[in-house]
Image 1 (cartoon, rainbow, N blue to C red):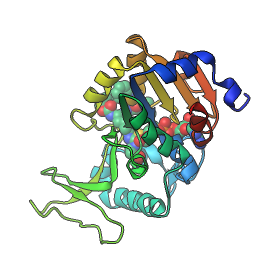
Image 2 (cartoon, protein in one colour; image 1 turned 90 degrees about the vertical axis):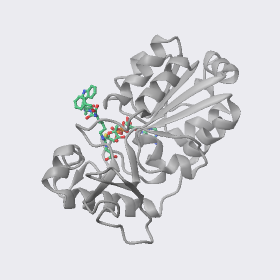
Image 3 (cartoon, rainbow, N blue to C red; image 1 turned 60 degrees about the horizontal axis):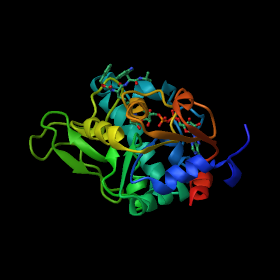
Length: 245
Ligand code: BV8
């Protein structure tokens, strides 16, 4: 596959991009890859943690079995993020929110880099690595790198866990519903940097498509969602998104 270039931006895509009023952007780990954040399935060292596959360590059963190990895994990833900055893709997507009448950013990522790039009202389908929540009363606590992470809930005294949606867990109440509604209203849906296999997130482009939206995927590789898309831009998000300017 040839890398996307200005030439591969079809007249149709450019027209759709320039005339859209409502846009939905679904991102996955690939949008943060050029910031240095390892992806889950495209290699990188986050696919395993101390010999445990990430979809095991990032699972609801692991919280019950070994909460300390789950904290170690997320503390490690959070510390990795400390030095990392948003890349051109995050900044372009944030800029789109000033370009379109409505541009909804929905992410599967927990890294907070969209917000760091200036994106507003980001829908974090899988929660945030920068928050902890009480396993009993659901009280939430911000986690800052320069402060020791609290272990126990101030409100009820029970243990805290990462405020992240793990495999086998339901998404934050309302997050998917709002995202699905915006997907059913958008004219253009961008699918950026996701392998498109984790549900229900990967169902959003399908909702947009069935509601008549024009779909554009941005990914160096083809995914199970590529066939659904009207345009597939093969390349790195940080290099491709600025070509749409
Ligand atoms: C749930 C935790 C109710 C946070 C994660 C149908 C409906 C509902 C659920 C299911 C279903 N079928 C199966 C399920 C269960 C499961 C699921 O989807 N399993 C899959 C694996 C089959 N879903 C759930 O458990 C969800 N819960 O629905 O609750 C329920 C429960 C059980 C059963 C039924 C219903 C919860 C899902 C959330 C799980 N938590 N992580 C964290 O640790 O970060 S998921 C994990 O995968 C991450 O959050 C990640 O965001 C997500 C998706 O991965 P991607 O973001 O796509 O990243 P990946 O590495 O895979 O791909 C990167 C892509 O980028 C690649 O394509 C690569 O080519 C590309 N790329 C690389 N570089 C670049 C690039 N692209 C652009 N530019 C670049 N430079």
